[in-house]
Image (cartoon, rainbow, N blue to C red; front, side, top):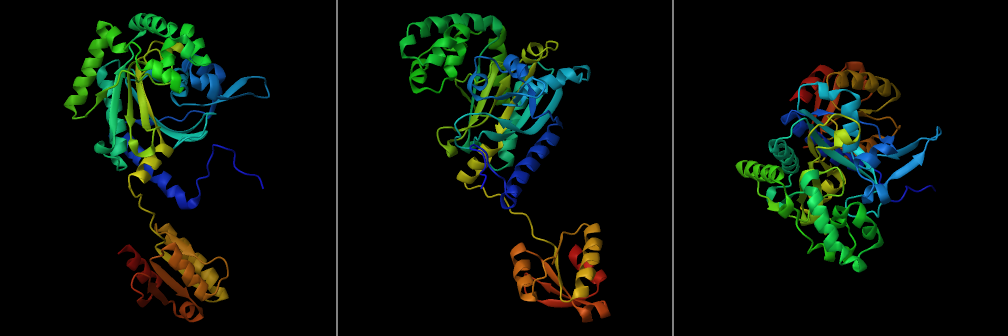
Length: 418
């Protein structure tokens, strides 16, 4: 037997309705916030992620699925959604449209990392991108979209903690990086080999290290909020004011830096304790330099990514029940050979009117058909035997109360509309 690759998961028919629920809610939220869907390829040229995500990040250094195609080109399965959207924004001239451009996506992403709670090597994200607005109001809008999505699926504010931070801009980041380098240089012996390499290239990435020793050292590192320039400080304060005006509770957490190099200024995470230590169910922020970094004109941008598997896990662990789909409106049960042909034609007519119709296709006995109809949750069962066909009047059983009625197909249709 060939087994599924480690870190992947089948979504079987008995579970897929849960995914439909999440995806439907995401599309409802997108409509309410006037966003349109963007779909980008599952794989991109590796250079896009090297330039966009950053070559000092764990994603690029350790987690990307990269290979050479038959033409010798380096290709990578996308490890996150934003870089591909930035590429599409440039390549399709979306910057020429009235701004801001508000987009969302539902996509698989691929990371070769140790599978953990709610995050597999292939997992799925609902993501939002707003391009063309440098205002902190755009940051607030992104956070409100994330909150609305979480609330929409039943995860209320009292189950969540919104943590926000500002990691500044290139101007004030330079001063902060110097302070970090001085701090970590004095403690380099206690750091992992990866962070020792990061010290010269990008000391900010040390704050995102998951190694316990590095985490303890980083806990007392200088705080970025103390190094913000006036513009970044003002941006952060305006975001806080906007969240307060919207009635959104938040905590300023100076240790949040996110794991991607493209972030500037605002970063945020929605955290739940329902899935253990790895409790981030949504993370995002602002990335004003990304479009230019991958070859476009300077374009401010903000957005987030929300893991669907993690979302489902939080819902399960907090007792949120996703309603199962309704059963068939009607089950057609042929009692003779001719009944199969009649049931097929009847099913087509009823389906054309919008009804969900199940019919017998396995040659089972009447007893077996009734058991199957009950398991499917069918609301009504129509018996189609020789006498029924001759008269054009069918016995219809209401599965809810067990009562039976004699009906023509027209009367059956009217009953189904009720």
